[in-house]
Picture 1 (cartoon, rainbow, N blue to C red):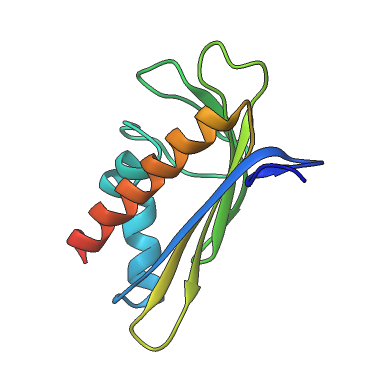
Picture 2 (cartoon, rainbow, N blue to C red):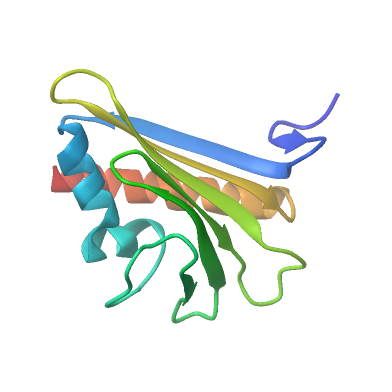
Length: 134
């Protein structure tokens, strides 16, 4: 039996989500705002989220936006310096009633269990901060 979070095809992965009391469009606008991006991705200033856009964070992490669907989801590669390959982050906002939205983060192709636990803590912290903002 494989350890929790280890899959045959996607390696180590993590999924974290939380339902927050905010309408879908407002949730999306918050998620992709400069302040929102700083919570779940890192310090990107003046960056336009568009499919195909490449980015580099202040800590040297690099990536590329591979999917961008307004008021729905985005997918991007995420590769800190020294990692053997990029991981993939998927971010979704899912309606859960008239004034509730699920914020969902999923990351796969993590290099090991330690990275999985670090990313779980990171996304949980980000969701806690989003909760305080709404």
